[in-house]
Image 1 (cartoon, rainbow, N blue to C red):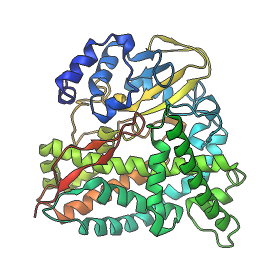
Image 2 (image 1 turned 180 degrees about the vertical axis):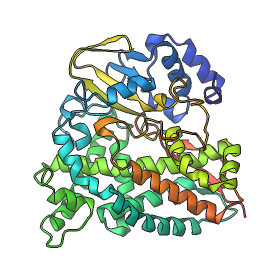
Image 3 (image 1 turned 30 degrees about the vertical axis):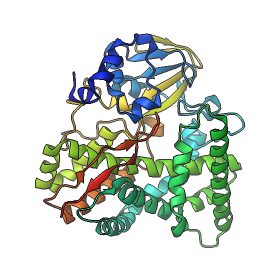
Image 4 (image 1 turned 90 degrees about the vertical axis):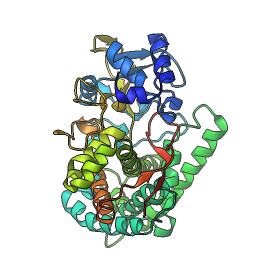
Length: 421
């Protein structure tokens, strides 16, 4: 049994292997919060890679847990749909009365047209411009950190850096940028599921987000000198300028969550992984050039988006199982990234892997993460700046991470750290 599985605790390992196979439900957010999900996924990969879960909070669904099967689903959009009207791309169905279409929840041709509107912001030329800004901000954030004093890495570094980046991409009022973090958390929260009052409060907050961004849209839609920010792109793009209000909100939330959670949780997850694997941290300090291969390894190891869901458009077969039209298919990226058949030593964090980009964290096919290169660049710059300041001193994790309760966003609420003086 792998080191990661054993680290999950003997109790959770025993539970994962004692429960009847047909009763396993890997959608339970508590398994992610307690970091005890790993033996469940290992068992499914070994015993039932395409696994039917007959109930639970999200209704019946298929869990796809192996790398090759996930790739098959992700790259066959003609069979496995992302369409919002069929339920969307998360375990949690899009709900009637609060329907949020967004381009990740569309099939071609509408998906392709809307994605094309925002893709220039992450084109190589623009990334080259953004790199200097990111480096300057990362330096200021790191220089503001206390020495020999415990502080929360998530709040002081991960959130602050990604929120500053989002504010730049949206040309969002700088002093109010933490609203973006808050709306990202509200949009991706699973805690209100099944709780009518909590869900009502969640929707109210998202409508506040809609009102705020509608005001920004109105300011920019007819600008004589158009900016190069995401709101202007959406307001003036041929495929997006006539969006209904809820579709605009949907796309804004997609860009906020996509721009926030991947990078934010990888910045935290990377530091945690290096502390859990001190030999790798020493290897990095001895050879900072390894940042290039470490960054995709962090993104694989963290897998900031645990799953993506599809809906079968026709009867089909997957992994020897009969999938029926209308069935909910869940690609567990977090499991595929630990599949030993596809990735050698998949349960080990190795910063100098020969093929570090062989992971599923950004998805594949037409829905591959549009901002993947931006996410990698932010991580690379952060670690370059960290090693400039503390080339010989590892930043120490001094307490347990607080993980969030979510089966979609694999992230952290806090991580106590200390920089030795």
